[in-house]
Amino acid sequence: MARGLPWEAEQLPACELHGAPLSGEAVGALWAQAVRAGSFGGGLGLYCHIPFCASRCGYCHCFSDALKRPDELSDHLRLLLTEISLWGPTFARSRFTNAYIGGGTPTLLPPKGLALLLGAIRSAFRFTDDAQITVESTPRTADANRLAVLRAHDVRRLSLGVQSLDRAVLARADRQWQTFEMVERACLNARRAGFPIVNADLIAGLHGQSVASLIADAQAVARLGFDTIHVYYFEPNKGAYDGRGRLGAAWRRRRQAMLAAVGPALAPYGYRAIFGETIYALREGAENRYDFERYFRAGSILGLGWQAESHAFPGTNYRHLSRQSWQESLRAGRMPPVRSYRGGPDWEMREFLVFRLRQGVDYGVFRRLFGCRPQDAFPAAFRALRRAGRLRERTGFVQAVFGSQLEYLAVTLHFFPEESLLRALSMRPSVQTDGGRESPVRRGSRPEA
Ligand SMILES: C[S@@+](CC[C@H](N)C(=O)[O-])C[C@H]1O[C@@H](n2cnc3c(N)ncnc32)[C@H](O)[C@@H]1O
Ligand code: SF4
Image (cartoon, rainbow, N blue to C red; front, side, top):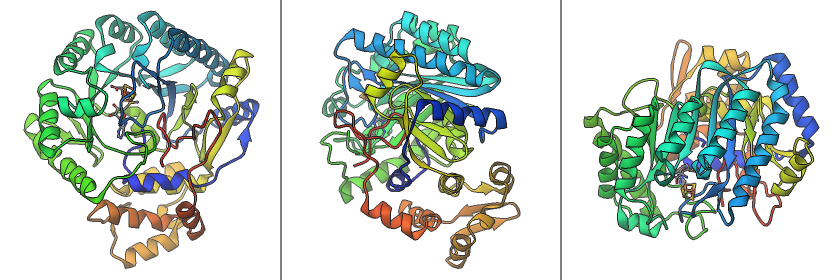
């Protein structure tokens, strides 16, 4: 998932540059060109989407459906295997630096299905020696058999969704099936299976949650010794709870108070915030490489599976056109068509600055990616921000100065030309047709309202 933006700002990129549909052949040619140029930005990742769960949680914005029949999952897997085999030759001489199998719930696949998927990925694509492969799981599907299969395919990072341990919060979230004992057992299974990195996701701002309940959850998870704890802002977009996608001011303040309290509560357990975000790690090197390379290094991502987000550096972002065309194309052995939803090298630079200015931008990194310094690419924005005292600068480095999420949003808005801002304020994110579904703006997530 996208990280690092104040959530309000995440809506902006979605409103920009909805491209025309591209045929599967055109997407193939686009990647072939990137492969020839060897230009993938700060890494080459693979994202594989499994859009099914055993049941839906009320708050969830991820693109997934409750599984109605087991053959939905096996059909999806079969098509994914075809998609993997179609892409393999294009990347025969490239090395992927990370892979992320996300959902939904990838560990809904039985051990045999997981072995087929990971085996196909391993044989179609080559990876760097230190490549990080992550699989997302729920506590109830992280059993010893499945985890053994993941480790046998050198999956190095397991991400467990915990969300909350508070029974009342879980009940309101339709996640009453989850117990603390289940989380504890999943964590133990992961340790026994030998995952080098085990992450727990929590969410701040769920219905019925208080600061005290989030802090108790964070500390309970810390006592289990997870390598990283990712505390998400609750994002009430269209797929979540009542579907209205709005937070009241009091709710926002409570969410902010939760996020402010969690760092100090985790510090005595040895956790430190990484990337200047609400991601806490026990040690260095435990970060999520998919996120780091994609969002902090403008890395490329080849997205597979209906609703996966792809990003071909510089500045091409796309998703499959529709579920139906994804299925029909793959059944016929062809690459599926896609729709790009924002793009251009210029956009890539803006996005990079929006993600990075919070923690600071190193000119060397920016120049390696874009061939210039940020102030040369956006002189007017830099002039205005300097005048407003919003930049902290030292040799080869610039960082935004801000006191709140809203102020950070105001800083980042300087990088959007007026006309794109006006469109952002008056338009909704791109809409595509698939049984009434709209195209989400982020990896595996549901659309913003
Ligand atoms: C694709 S989900 C996979 C989680 C896994 N299926 C589970 O339930 O344990 C990845 C993460 O997105 C986060 N997430 C889901 N809905 C969210 C929302 N509305 N706001 C913020 N984070 C959310 C959750 O923390 C979740 O663990
Ligand atoms: S939180 Fe996980 S299990 Fe619940 S609906 Fe979202 S992806 Fe599915």
